[in-house]
Length: 325
Image 1 (cartoon, rainbow, N blue to C red):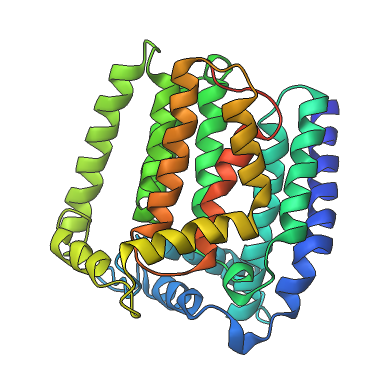
Image 2 (cartoon, rainbow, N blue to C red):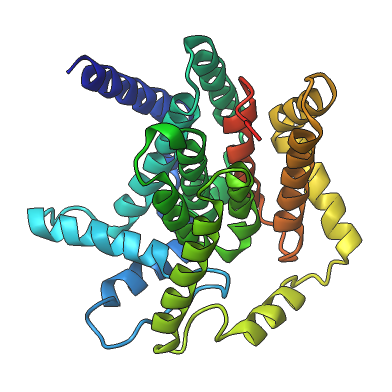
């Protein structure tokens, strides 16, 4: 009962802070400036399970998870007959909910009070200085993926205290893959935590089986990443409308990270230089940085919301060491 009250109080406090730091900006965002992808998600969701086929019209790197997420929200609204709630309200509320979820995970992923407070302050600083642009304020797949990745890392870190943790980890990782394929490299770094675990082989096998099963189902609807591999390669190869070179895109990525997320740059340098990590732990940091840069650079599009995939790193390493490799 006491723990439940603590969690409820924490959630209430987090929602109030989130509303103050970024929620007001999201609510005040003009309806005409909402990311058009959101309307594609919502319209796709309204058609789900009403026709005998799936229909994803968004960019090829987006899977069916987000439309299903909005389908569930629409389903709940229909049950309670909330007729005054329109799609704009759903999109804005979902964005605030995702930021609040990130805030909550930032705090709960750490054990001691000092680390929780520091992680909370770091996330507050991120929300305070994050660019209040349409791109960042609108609901997007990177925000959703950041929540799923931190959640999967929380399960990995606390696997000794969570029953069937390896199953939950695999399911969350697969969800990331079918939310936004672009985020998959960062999600796959979670396997690093399980490398010496007795469940590691079972996790690899289960991951393959789940992926094969999902791909088989999607293949029936002429979807799935393996079915459309040629389309994905073309999408990445011709993704930049301004014909940016890899060098130009890489320079934009480094500049954007430094400009919009100086907190990440500071903690990355501190963790790599000042803390006495083992070689394996240092490799993990370098791999994470490489995955972030690749994830933002490879699509060839200069979208600032790609930077939100930095969040899992900050959640893990802004306060205390969480690696046990």
